[in-house]
Length: 133
Length: 276
Ligand SMILES: Nc1nc2c(ncn2[C@@H]2O[C@H](COP(=O)(O)OP(=O)(O)O)[C@@H](O)[C@H]2O)c(=O)[nH]1
Ligand SMILES: [Mg+2]
Image 1 (cartoon, chains in turn brown, red):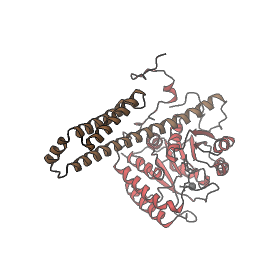
Image 2 (cartoon, helix red, strand yellow):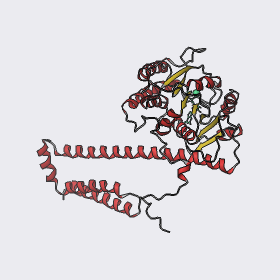
Image 3 (cartoon, protein in one colour):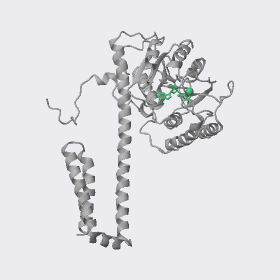
Image 4 (cartoon, helix red, strand yellow):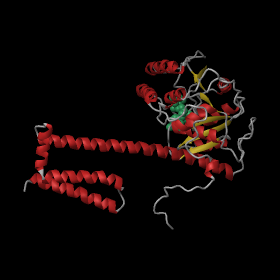
């Protein structure tokens, strides 16, 4: 057997096993597992049927088939990395909002537990219980 | 839309928001300064994950203290402050640095200006006192930003990076929903957001002092970074879409107010796996 095929099969199998194990231990959510599962499956397919690569390379006019593989792989990784940055940004915004809320709640709680020691305000009392207009 | 504005009265209930990050050395003096300004205001110190005794110092000085669980930067601190101000029915909020660089003598004129502006910036290069010293690069950046924003706001703005600014309820509503988090971009971007939300911007000349203690977050090495980030913030703020901040009462804080939160309500998307 061609050593590169063996390598490809071992690689994809390892990814699949790790994916399965992480899912089983709930270390990975399904929505993220799907895309990695597809990646592993695709690389497995290409190793077992290398002709697929040759045919598609010829079809799109790429001279060296491996270049098509590298191109596809780097595009997939780029998209995944981008998606993760997007998710990260959303998470940051959410945790920022939560942090702000926690701080406000803590202040609210302090004010309710200890009698209000706020300075008098000329324009009305700022500590009326029904504030929040 | 901006032509016919009914004259407003001077804001009565004013909250001073003091973003503070490890400012225990300067804070007491700053708070004393505000107290002796002659303005009857409430002071909210937003302690932004400080590792020193900023919160204790602020509480001892009689200020309201809001402690963020971790450092969010000036933007996070300010949005927290604006949300507090809105929920507690303040008419205006003034951003005031903890480090003692802002002079409380200008509180009164800044608040005065809110009679016919939604947002008033305390500007350093508007002719008052000794010129504020900054590096040439930063100065150039500030100049470019000032020109660009002046055109947008259709008024003369000479110092859009100043953190000394007063906002009325209208601007507060905008900021409570959309205050940017990025440090160094926050002042510029928030000004653009206010302009785009239809706020009337004004400025008032102020003189700033040198720091009273602690360390400045602006070193000369970061001047270039400042230039780049402020420029990026400006461009982004121009091309970004801001959800529904146009008309007067369009924006409520995105979070429920204390009042609403007391009413229990069920969500459709119940969290999974919460069975007893
Ligand atoms: N909440 C918060 N405040 C900060 C942070 N960094 C600086 N500040 C506060 O922002 C104000 C201005 O900071 P400073 O470093 O003097 O900036 P500069 O005056 O623009 O050079 C001070 O009151 C600081 O305590 C931060 O990460 N979070
Ligand atoms: Mg400063």
